[in-house]
Structure formats: structure tokens, C-alpha cells
Image (cartoon, rainbow, N blue to C red; front, side):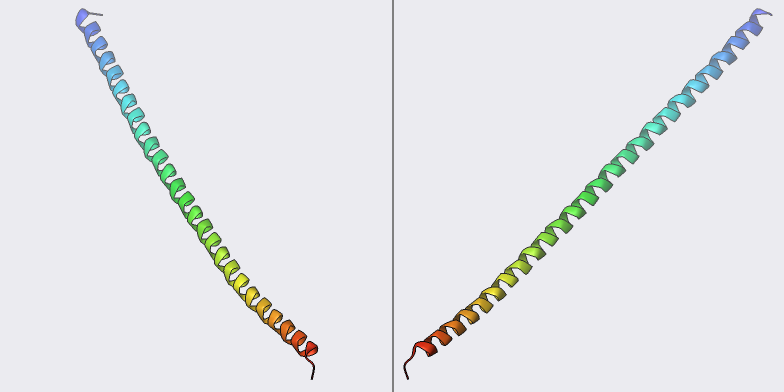
Length: 97
């Protein structure tokens, strides 16, 4: 081999290696960008899901408390009616006619 052939072979080999390194760096950069986007997407989706679950749970608790309040008021009204009935019965039985 002549010196110019050796130099040409080394230059081609160097250019090929440089091209492969460049493509490898670009592939890794693309991979990092895509995986970062995916990671943020997953975090945001989980955050929104958690917020939705929390909101649903808060609404369920509010509904349960409102229902319990209405039930307690209705039961208090029924109890007052019962107490008044018992009081009327007792007053009628203790009255002397």
C-alpha cells in the first residue's frame, strides 16, 4: 500500500467512525427526549387521576354528610312527634273528668 492509500483508508475509517458516533449521540438524545416526555406525561396523568379521585371522594363525603344531616333532622322531627303524642296520652290519662 502506498502512503496516499493508507491515508485515504484512515481518513475513510475516521469519517465512518465519526458518522457512527454522531448517529449514536443523536439516537441517545432522541431517546432521552422521548423518555423525558413520556415520564412527564405519566406524572401529569397520575396527578390528574389522583385529583379526580380526591374530588370524587370529597364529593362522596359531602353527600354522605348532607344525607346524614337530613336523616338526623327527620328523625328528630319524628321523635318530637312521638314525644308530643306520649305527652298528650299521659295528660289525657291523668286528667280527671
